Image (cartoon, rainbow, N blue to C red):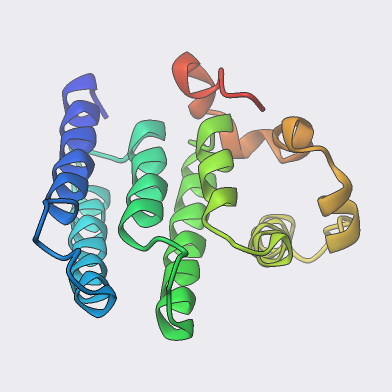
Length: 177
């Protein structure tokens, strides 16, 4: 993906966020907010899916980072119902899988992904599921061990293949991890 496409992806997530945060648009009532935010998440996911299917414009590390940000902003953890939370986690899992498969995981995207989960165990389960998928069931990491790794060191304990293309994005790898 070229630099222009990354800028377009960033502009899309910014536009969606600003639309969702427009005063009076949804802030009058929590239920209205949920009804607006959820469809916007699917608009962002649809744009990502179309980009992923295009042969000339493939998602890159910026795309995945902005998708995790869009999910965090458009489906905030406060006042989220269990069904929407399950959908949020499902979206995160799907995007993480594609991100790792494409080798675009960065320190920033991992940090943002982690913040999408209110409970550390849920984050660990998603990451362990991806590790199991990647390693074909020969994963030696368990939840307790994964959660014992300091946040700033977690990225270095993950397969290098997951970040093979994401390493070139210096700004996304300067995160506090």
